[in-house]
Image (cartoon, rainbow, N blue to C red; front, side):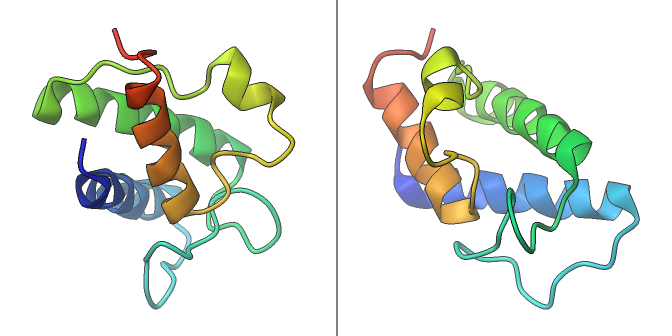
Length: 101
């Protein structure tokens, strides 16, 4: 999957998650937008919903089935969900590693 497509999917899902949270959206959502950690735009439940939404959108719109919150992702020293860009890279890596169904 093209990285730009992955970024677009993450950004679109993140916009929806922020709207649903009722929090004011940041001025700009881009690859540097923090999802997990200090200055995160979502709480932990919002992140869980975001991951599920991304997985569903990838499957419905791009016919790609992935599990983003797998054992490998959860055991990494740095979260693969830190920023939009890092998450897009994680999506690409999961697909490349053949963890996609």
